[in-house]
Image 1 (tube, rainbow over the protein chains, first blue to last red):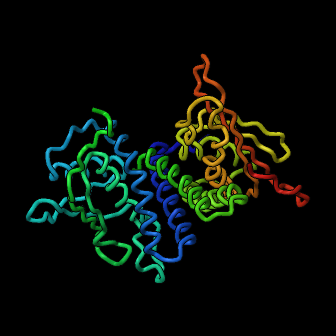
Image 2 (image 1 turned 60 degrees about the vertical axis):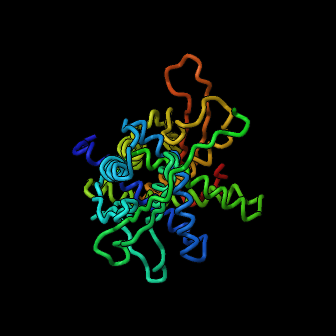
Length: 180
Length: 180
């Protein structure tokens, strides 16, 4: 067939669009199933968490990044390696709190919202909340309890998309009882 | 841009969520059918959108067989990263597309143990194909069959799925076949 031009770039683009459109279909379905936006946000977070706990293994296998020494290193790895690997963007890490336990990821463009507009009756919907769950789940599997939320969202009129991540505590590994 | 793995994880989580959700709302009898049609419906919308983006610069297709060849090659490559392995037709509107290593089933274990679960993971893809065909002017019914073969000494991976497409060419259509 003669439709050979730009095969590889097209296929990467197609994959991205497939993911974006699938995510859109998912959010639409959730909005239909649940009456209020808060519930949808919660479900997205839960689903993201389930994805995150598996994604971390894939990430560690592909990236061969070693254990991070501190939260700052974690932030850099998330922004420069993980986001780049999976979403093709590199958010910037800024707004560190004085104690060094909270920072922001600023994204100029959010690939999940490529074809999306929020209608007026869904103003409290956090469309990309899956991302928060993914980050939370992934970090929990490497012994970090974090709180992740969106503080700015282009879908709601802000200029950039900002995710705020706060380190809560280190999770101790618990040996199963009776394993002495 | 978005890694293929992300879509696979999202898809897995979607299927799991839809089934868990239906289960928690009671009504066990119509569970399976509603879940399948929900997933299929989501795939349909996404397939329509995808094919629009993908073929906007391409010349129009000569006939149905040309459309099917496009689906088997370009569309399948872009969505599932490989071509269809075998296309058969009875030249009367039925097409069988065979994929010996369907991308969304490779995570399943070989053999027959999870054969019953496989249709859940094909519903979305059936919808994808149906949506794509519908926007290309072909009104079809798409079903899928899986026959997991034991791996023995064959070098091919052991999950083989067939997508069966019934194209409605005449107004006298027999009743829509049961999806699964």
